[in-house]
Length: 330
Ligand code: ADP
Ligand code: NA
Image (tube, rainbow, N blue to C red; front, side, top):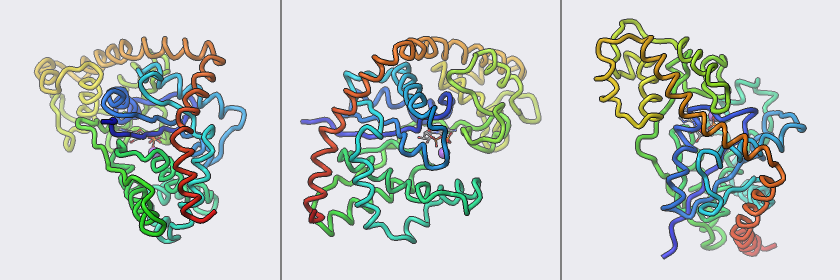
């Protein structure tokens, strides 16, 4: 029997993924390659919803793809591609937009958050309809499962609603995707504000650890991380969010359990933990940075690899879109 299909996407960010992206998302994609027929997409159409530099866009996608390969995605075992190279995404999004209620789209809380940050009047219609494009990303591939973090749950619900609605209106066409909740998905918080998630839109660069930054810089950020009153190293996300975040990162990157770490740091101070974590991060990112540089050193080869990925993607997306157009009556 065919393996179930999974789809996930990530925006090509300006310079590098951060540890939250890795531990909350793309790190898990690697394991899913073997149990699923996995489609992974660098969602560059989503990257133009809030203003961007056109001279940088293609390179951002390359850097994103290079990092995905560097952390272990294997184009022989998954389909890795760039969204804008598969025109069916935008085409299906239009059709889905026509069966989405205006009020329904307006209830997406991420739009409210993001548009508020930009000043509501300046937020683009593209940002508003972004969850519909996300639904198209998923439904085009008839994905059975979508790995989602808590922040994306509402968007997956919309994808499910739109799949069901289309199937009811026009006849069975789409697989209704399920959320794939990855166990032990760490939610990484901002080093400077341990109550907020680590995010590229964080106010302080000191709060974010980037996969591709100089490890000495990461170590410095970790040393300056906001910790909590008291000096005991224990895991307590409510009372000690700062120390708990450091333990979460440490555990995830080293493979040691939190309990093991807490035992090992009994009687030691925050400074010891931070110093060692800086070293753990350095060891973790070094090979990823090496491999990323390797892929980026041969952009023509990287581009060829992505063209092949897009061809594999279109072999699935094309028939879905043709079925959609036919049912809609085009
Ligand atoms: P950002 O919040 O930096 O804008 P995105 O929204 O582009 O990041 O997230 C890309 C992926 O990384 C999503 O699957 C999201 O759930 C995951 N992710 C982002 N930040 C974190 C975090 N701090 N902890 C865990 N997962 C995260
Ligand atoms: Na986000």
